[in-house]
Image (cartoon, rainbow, N blue to C red):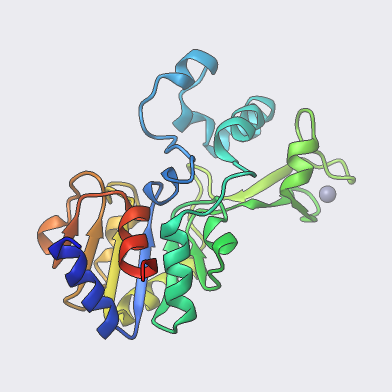
Length: 242
Ligand code: ZN
């Protein structure tokens, strides 16, 4: 095992309040691409840039195009958790990990067995009517041929935070509190450039910041362990391998 992986393993062994903060990179090993990463696909198939298509104003003015993009690029009902998700669920089961704070909306942490998951950007698994607030599941949205409609006639929207919308203050407060209490903070699969990631990290008061990301992040110099590798492979080797 590589030296920094041994250090991470020891750090986890000594920890009693691990918090994980993750971004899109956590799910790429499950086959879910980061819609922000440049791959040209969007420009070929869709008329609008992805960042515009996930905005609130686009949703209310172009719900049909929104859902075409959403179904094809933002929900992956068949995706399975990878070793990053399984390792974090295992650490929670052992009582060491207290919270997963995620920017992803793919529900994979829950699928892997994690319980305390703080979803900063909401969940692509939950939907509700904009008029009467009736709750719906992903099946309703996948089965609808165009815009999913409530039986009351209202439009059903995803319970995700769209661009131009603010994050749920309750989720932010819980995330801050978890990060503040953490003795080990593991950050993975995010370059920490997207709001509110960098801001939340400021609340960490410990000396055991671990960054696992394929590319450099703006917090590398603050970390005690930096691992530039795939997070599923890394956490799988450190936590799940016997
Ligand atoms: Zn309704």
